[in-house]
Length: 225
Image 1: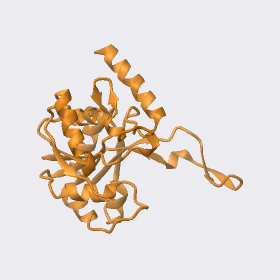
Image 2: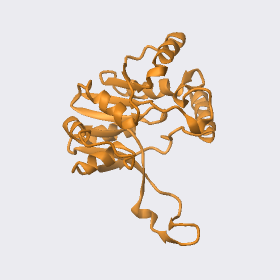
Image 3: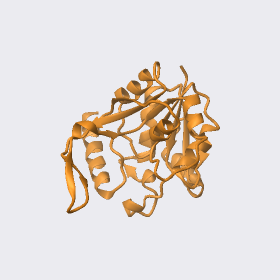
Image 4: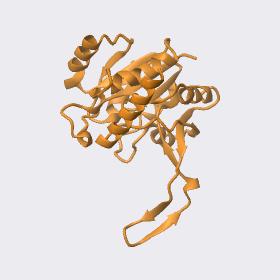
């Protein structure tokens, strides 16, 4: 089973309050995005890696890779206005039997999570890694709300995996701002989504606080090497 991986890095990082998109911020000696790409290359060097980037930042990325000596093979795809557009663009270049879609600012996905998604794709059409909700939850507004059982809910991560024909078919549906991930779009197209275990370290770095957590994790990883 051949694998194509679409890594989405089209954000401009408004919540990070930085002078460049969050995927280009350094964690140690490499950018967040470089570390993310390395996770998948180290898992399987035969996989096709497609990277979606905003048009205005493609040259910056290429220069950054040259400066840092980053040589992991990947193909750059120009992103679109929305994440939906970027992934739809990338789907035109996939060669794998299955397609994994991953957030470029999740550099701590582990091999067990990636492997769990791929293994489940042997028998399933769509797979999403998740974590159980640890906190108590309530639904409603400030003054009118009720408790809801956390056992009924999951925190969804990436990479989400799909049989190639399933995700290609899903992206024939029109864009909707209410759909925030690929599993939801595929579900809307009629496919069932199967859940597998994610990993707690697989955080999405979107705020300055997330970046502080990531820096601590990198420091701990460096100490164990």
